[in-house]
Image (cartoon, rainbow, N blue to C red; front, side, top):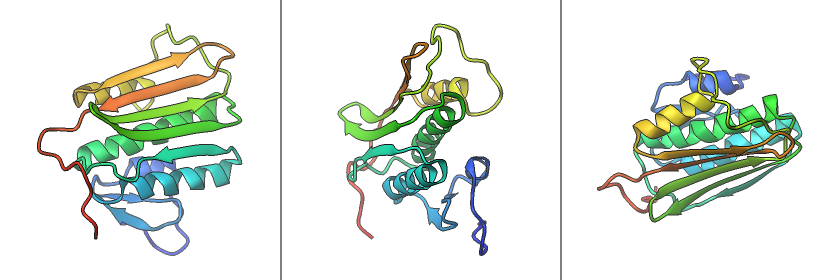
Length: 173
């Protein structure tokens, strides 16, 4: 893992990591599967600090263990939605919520930025943008929703189903 002294992971670095680890902006390595809430909170706190844009965070502390693929998907959806808001929307504040629902893990990212015409299909740029998020969520059997209009900000929402047999509580330790 890239945890040498002085290394600070950026968004491109985190996306390039192996599926069994995430390097936070602090340089600490966290290994899946028992770290999604602190990984999200640490990442969002670091982004808010670096960008100067406040991010209101509500991450359910009792998220079930989802397995590596789904946990990384949740992390990357939040990461990309926040990155898009900061890079393209000129947002002055963001809200991020990740919650457990009867249907799965609900992800909601809202910004107060410039918004855009959500009726125009997003370009497939080969990255993990809106098109990539939608495709990957659908591959997992989930739902992806986008609400935006010029001057109205953007709301990215995803529902990642919990597979049968997945734990509904994290094991301590």
